[in-house]
Amino acid sequence: MSVATQLEQEAMHYAEEAVQNDKVGNREKATECYKRAVEQLTRLIRLYPDYTFNKFYIEKVTTYQERIRFLKSEESGDDPSFGEKFTTFETQTTVSNMETPEAKEPMERPNVKWTEVAGLEDAKRAIKEVIVYPVKRPDLYPLGWSRGLLLLGPPGCGKTLLAAAVATEIDAEFIQIDPAAIMSKWLGAAEQNVAKVFGSARKTAISGKPVIIFIDEVDSLIGVHTNEVGGEVRMRNQFLKEMDGMQDKGKKYHLYVIAATNKPWDLDWAFIRRFQKRIMVPLPDYDTRLRMFELNTVQLDLTTDVDLHELTKLTDGYTGSDIKDICQVVRQEVIRELFESGKAIDTKAKPRPIGMGDFVHSIESRKPSVSRQMVESYDKWFDQFKAL
Image: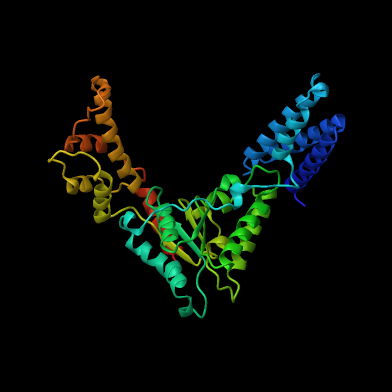
């Protein structure tokens, strides 16, 4: 057993014992156990400063220390609200009776359609082949179908939009995993949260409704770390187990995992190979950028000199997010002018139309968020690991 694992388990033991004693009013014993839990977590944080779970364990340390101060306070014995305060504290602290809705409840499915995702035709085609077609005609797939899909590429290029669009296309339950919630508010509960997510999704899929589990920034959840210890190892192993379970022969329900990453090189091969389809979501090309300008300016009041083709040429190397930001900034600028002129007090007053010069100024003031070196890194990784 590693030192980190031992410290985690001891902290969990002391935390559980502290809560049990706290609940029955044994303040002295509870205080001592809270102190022991704090000591073990503090040692863990100091020994492994880069440990993924440290920020959550720091929160636990703070919570336990606050409880210790409360138990030691002169008013605690006569405080009529003690029971209420303990109930709140127990809900935040206990390990054995965990309820983590963030980790298992589906979010409202984003209502994104394919037409709202500009360009990315290769990625759309691949996603349809992997997910949409098997849902519509499972009888055509006697050998089964892929369950894991990895979307990689620069930030702001539409990976999340693609996941939302395919969920809309197949009317799927959409479960978006927040790595921070999985790795978790609860002491030692990350692997249990992973199991709960997949367990709940599996039940829904078996009942006949397609389910998509979407993991954004998956590298932060299952990436390679130099000092991987304790809870990270258990959580990663649980994720591997769940992914393997989805691939078992004879599983005909429609449960898919779509993961997105801006750092594919931080994923190790054990996880990469479990995503049978690995798709690059690149920087937008000319036609895609033009479509993005059209979508983002359709509700804006533009002067006749605005040339979207020229703006498209000026934004070579910009992401879709960059282009949206440019359009938002020019709109904000004319609104600012309206307020500074004092005319905004008249509710009928409108900002002036946006001209070509406004766009050019915004573009000149904003560099692309992705460098050429980054693009080369994505291309190199994709050439090595692509699976279309």
